[in-house]
Image 1 (cartoon, rainbow, N blue to C red):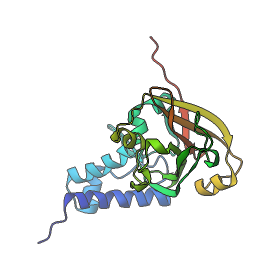
Image 2 (spheres, helix red, strand yellow):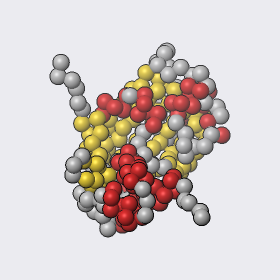
Image 3 (tube, one colour):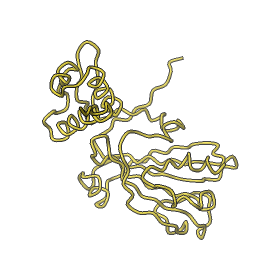
Length: 239
């Protein structure tokens, strides 16, 4: 008798719940079936049901509350702006896939973003990616411009999964500081089409720079988060 592996079982439950959330069958704030109810519905063990719910919680799709149950998370994430300077966040970001829209080598004067401190004819690599959330909805538009001499082979990498900070460090390129700028903007027609929102909507663009010890900017990334999906805040210790 064939027994389906636990990994297949919990992922099957996870995908089914994601489908129900994405379709609106389980709207924001709705309570999901309990672990025991999932065990009965899918004929699985308690650890399998628990793992499916925990994975959804880790992806930010649901919120688990001890003694109350598991609920569909709201679409508005709360993000501490100071976390953008954390190398761990710079490396991993949030859950969800990337879709590469374009990738090319060009000169700094023709790049979609300025790379501060470089001459106009300096070679740079330009990558534009669309970031999706855990439910595969467009979440952010990411534009990267990287100094070509710092990462000449970057276009040979799997760009959907590329973590630029890790790639630079794998080439022993020293990144000394991470600088973050926050820029209010209006969503353009093209951005609105990609992010499935209204053109002209006010939004917040985050621009990050990776800097070498001599203050040379090695890479800059501009991230435009889909309006209405996030709340930004700054939290500092009281003492």
